[in-house]
Image (cartoon, rainbow, N blue to C red):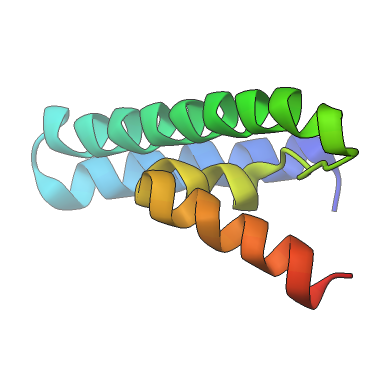
Amino acid sequence: MATGWIIALFIVGILLMIAASKSGTNPIRWIGFGVMQVVIGAILLFFTNLVGELASFHIPINPVTALVAGFLRLPGLAALIAIKLWIMS
């Protein structure tokens, strides 16, 4: 699927969610909360990768890992490290 279609479907989904909730601020607040958690997770992963360079350890920063690390914070980061060490090795 082309990137343009994905962006268009995302925008239409947001507009439908706003129309269904009868309020424009509540869905936007949830979207902002989710984006903030992804950013926090990406920052946690960045610093983990910085420290992990000493031991040649790297966790890829992508939307899924950033979501896990962002929403669960340190337990999520520990889970990602455990997955990387035991399951992926």
